Length: 205
Image (spheres, rainbow, N blue to C red):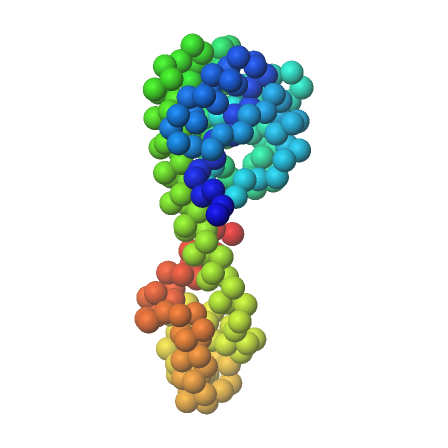
């Protein structure tokens, strides 16, 4: 039976810090993986299921901010909580602009970190559910024929069957059939549901 618990990924060059965080995070009934450098972290693939990254800002080689930028370029969306003993305002601002969910200065209160981890994981679980639903919508769109895809695009634009028929040079009854097939394949009950689904996946890229 696979372990479905969320995973916390800790990247910090301080061995004592990694061990302390590992013990505390495991006590929260969460999986935890630790890494001594950004390079070591990049060698492993993204985790399956919800995850959160606890990342030190200043490390030999790639810094935490460098790693954040690299992960963003790879479309790695796991939420990041930064920790640092060398906190400064510019680094904090850059980290938060880059999408970090929190920024804690060492020595920090462990309860603050654990609270931040749980909040980040809760948000990530919700986002993963949305991404899974969006992926399913994209798969359904792929099942449409070229003509059904044309009808879909025009329905989403708000055109009526008669208007679509004129634009596509087809009989209105034929468009009605295509529209019914689109609704069936997309597994929606109304045009409003169809529009919401399509617009959301477009916005998500």
